[in-house]
Image (cartoon, rainbow, N blue to C red; front, side):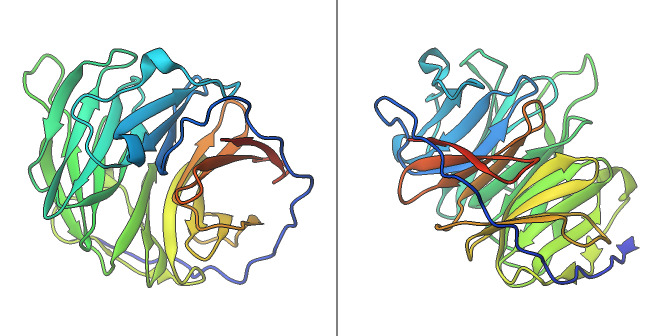
Length: 286
């Protein structure tokens, strides 16, 4: 069993927002937008819960209607894009659910995971091809891809118990960040440093209701708090930015190509886009 200790995050400084953004023109395709993801080219993927679909927008905020995924999508709560461009979707169901995989821009489903899946709320993929699933209970499942040339889909490799309930997950480099609705943001070692046993971590509680998370690169994580805020944090470091919102954020994603932060509003059917360099609101997709 491996135990990691991390430094508690200190107080947060508020950075005020600037000018409001203009709205996206056209018919609003967003109905209960939930989890978000961005691929290596800067395309945005939206778990559109209200239509049981995954929507795709290019970097100019234009919906790519020919890339909408609907096959085997049921109450999608989260979406992730791995380094190979494969799309992973968390489908929620009472006392169950599934994780479905789609290969790149092809809409054919290439795999389904049900083992260990229990009302999944968040999903993340890492550079090794592992798939991290945060279930509604207080545990995280990690699925590993088969070896090169081997047959079959991802298999359950580890399950980690963390005091929760948990709300979000993000993985980058050697760190996993978990959003806890009571503890705030929990940091722990990524899979490459875990051998067996339970994931034991200390936690930071500056965010009393830590919600969704996104990997921001260079060891930074963006955390969306249910209370209506977004902060940029790192293990053992003070927050380096903080954005206040007028709504409860449902999903969050970082576009490292275009220096953008996407935040979804589930209830009012829109997504806001912020600059990760200035924290300014630059666009609203609705």
